Length: 94
Image 1 (tube, rainbow, N blue to C red):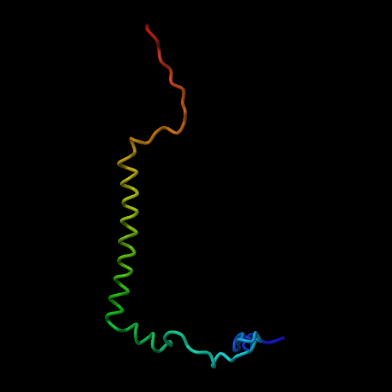
Image 2: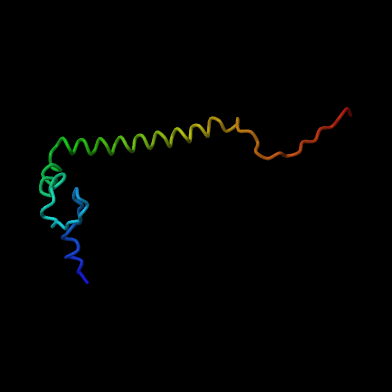
């Protein structure tokens, strides 16, 4: 039974002829930044501004949607039709 470390160090791939081959993880091309590169980018002022702007816009939009839904409920509260068909009684000609 293979250990977890030996399983995680290999990946399976299929070539053009349909045969499966095992490749070591070290042989795979790297996609994206390494951890060191990410840490360097994280400290740059433009990315700090971009992060705070994105977070601020998210919460501003979220708050505006919440306020808008509350405003719709408050302003249209009197226009909501009754959902129950309660019988009405009328008196005729007394």
